[in-house]
Figure 1 (spheres, rainbow, N blue to C red):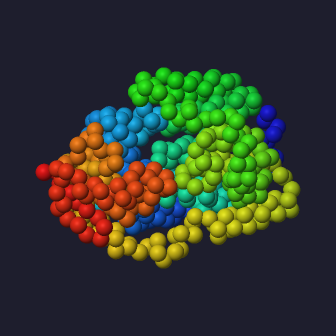
Figure 2: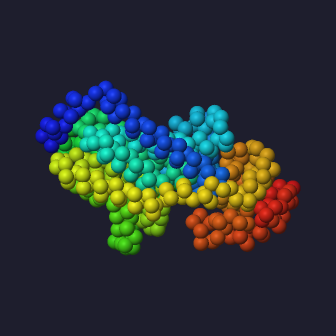
Figure 3: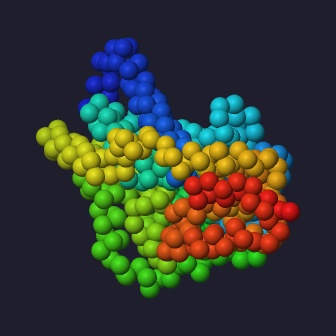
Length: 462
């Protein structure tokens, strides 16, 4: 076991480094992480300012965390009547954001979620960059830049907020420790993953098995713990809260081989930026549980690169790539692989979602959104509101919000209806209403129109 980790020529390089170089080695990953944090924060907040965030999922998570912040269970009326969000996915770790949300001083409180997510993603770069620096500074910068522009992290950052933000640094620290032989640290960094999302217990199990195979006996107990956590959360805790675990119906093993081209493309785009060298490392097994449930899922969004589903895979892939690099040994092969990874990362950035940061339209607030912002201000705080999907995220910080087409349980005192909301397209994901439905709501009995501007209506119950 130890022979595979020992590299007799590496320590001699480290001994001759001066204090300056050691200082830079410790600071460089944090500098890049800081820059990535700023970029990710700007992109996420600007996305909210132009009205691209929505009830799915920023509004839903804000409702839950707002309730945590005021000492309540994580109720989310956008999901339905008396809906405890722990009955959707098991993510009690979100309670850590409650104090920050409660006392957020800069702008709308929902920004605390977007900025926290950006910070967690950026933090995930640090342990992997530090590990890669033992190969060389070029490898370190390749790792950091590659992860920063990766499809998984950028798509997640630009799609509202999700609990998996906590998983990214936890996986990075655990995988980096595992690859460097710090097995106890790898184990303890993995344990909190079971509080992030119910499926991540299976990832914990794989970490445990890898530890056990490297001779760390507690790894086997970690593997059983991870499996047990997933079973308990999906079969006991979530059903006790919500009545059943609804996502179990989404898994059908027969679907795994269907839509093969899309799924193979997903794997190719995720692994291409590291020149596919990650497949040479045993750490590559970490991706298996997540890819299995995604490719067996009936939801087409699981199969591709959109949304947030690939974020947790990025630190696994880059950790496997660093581990494989560290075993190459031959400087010429190492150099060629690094060039391949650089080219892969550049191509990923060129055609990937990070390109939106350089699109001038990204930073321009459209007139319709300015109207919506003005209409939101016409609704008082601490009232019940029924609204359309995109407008929901603008209201959840101050009101109890439900979707207008599913608001009968709440009997909202106010309605905010946007006939131009893209989610009113019946083919759109999460489209609760058609534009015709929204127009008809304007004529609901017992409501009077308070304001009508640019296809947006504010109505109050009479």
